[in-house]
Image (tube, rainbow, N blue to C red):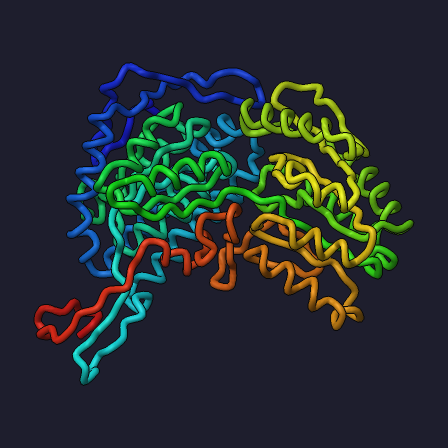
Length: 498
């Protein structure tokens, strides 16, 4: 049942008088539940409880934390259709997307449960070492997680950041996304129920609401908090990063802040299958109304007759895609503003752009620009979040390499080529490797597999620390630090170092 309150430890509270409602973007109207923005007292209480819970929670056996994570998955799954319905009411996304994202969320929780059921993840070293030194990874402390706008489940309340932090022994405070507060509260209630059933300490998890930025800022400034997880805009992520650095004791902010995900297409590939590539990429650009951080927002190739035919084919395929409902009026407004800013640049040609006929909807847009103009105008390097892509036509391969060298850091890059030309692509591959966290060969960037081989991150500004992934088992490395015991008696050592 949705109450609109904050979940602080095992208690629901609503002591403030600042309220707000979520919006159904598909119907363009407010949802009925009134949510209460967390007060300073509620923020302080959640942080104090997390601090108190840390030492006991971080020391319990991995098998018990695994039971907690598994119980969360069971409780979230038990919400059934009521969770799916709330998800759709607050996001405008279809039932199939809701079910798919729910499956991924449950899978992540159970994956981390399996990982920490034993303590092998700690990479313990030194057992029997004559020097007396023994080292292992330990939890860093309470973590604040910010819910994502474009993934109400998989990157939000019980998503990958929360699951990975809880897995290694870090209490979590979620700052629920204001667009998805109802979805977040249902999931938070499931987490608290799982915590109580498995005997976790109060304060191991809290969920705080707010429509503005103040609650998030106060959480990051609180001395009990030791790290931050964020998925969202560059503006939001950088603001949190700066705030955390200004603390008397700075803390890490692991922010994934979006990307335009360049796609490089060779002339051989265009000559052999340009129409097929155009059809595939029309689907990728518009998947989820373009609201994926790995959306292919930039396509780079050398100008030619084949390249022009590809542009025409891509525009034709995009024109067949119906406009879609975006997640929230602010996101739709941002998409429209981004289009208008690009349209102000004289060197940019819009091959297709259709005004939406419905509130909160967006239709795909395709723009084209010459390579030299792209290089000379950094505004063209910015993300337009939504079904937007720009084709950059380089005059030759040397200019194509220069375009890559001038790119900001990205989450992904894609190389579309013929297998017989692989031997000639080393230069492009190395240039892309300097700029991205993941390179795809002859595929599409949309889609992030939850596997150990996945890197979901990249050089700034795609993320604040390219050494870490936000997806997969290795994402736990954001919430731990190495620790050494020297010449300690065995009775004082933790079991995983004996």
